[in-house]
Image 1 (spheres, rainbow, N blue to C red):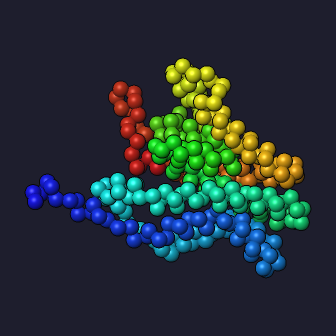
Image 2 (image 1 turned 45 degrees about the vertical axis):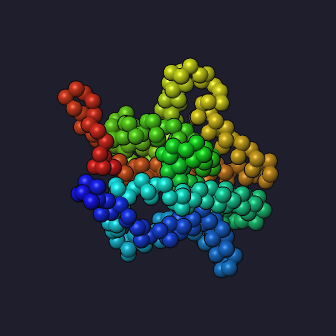
Image 3 (image 1 turned 180 degrees about the vertical axis):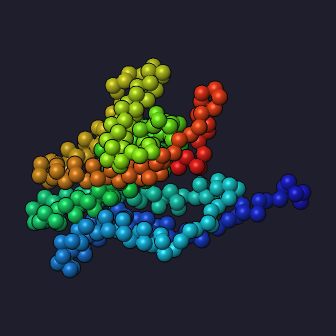
Length: 293
């Protein structure tokens, strides 16, 4: 066999962490875990298990395990991308995510939670919503229609469906520039960034979608508008839950949604803080590189 015909030495790379990818499904079950711990111990503080898991246990585990440099080569990527196992690790997040949301609504509607427990339940469910946006991010980058549909379903809980449009067609192009609402600026506080990112991302998504529809000769207001259909999906979800459990669940639904998209934007704040792409002599920005995140 000639040297050119020989397979790449990492073409048959095996993922040593393959069985552990399913551990990601512990996240959408955080409200269940919180309720179970609170019931067993009788301590309402365990309703805050979600934030404790996300902001204490995971960083601690990250520190203890250290860096992991066992990444696949480009030669192995196509084979791994076609492996449906990894897709199902993502798909399974959605039923658990929405199952936890419905269960949390039942606990809220029961009226038996004190203030600490109610706020903790909202925070734990908000963590699920925030990580759900990350799940939607992965699904939204795929080419299959089903996965893009699932992406918008994952975003319904946080009422942040416009992220589907803005992230792929706005943020990826303008990241690390002054034009990107999701790129934090040097010296900008998180709270200032959060206000600018939420409003700016929404406005940018709408402009991008209007431009896309007009370019294709479609009506702006219609079923082909991905921003509108995403918002309507969230509205339908919130309406159904309100009809099922009563208007008392509305503060819970709004609270967990706000916490969910705030968690996403906190990641954006950290990833791009103070980073700017240089301009070329023709006035355009240099290509996006890893150093811009």
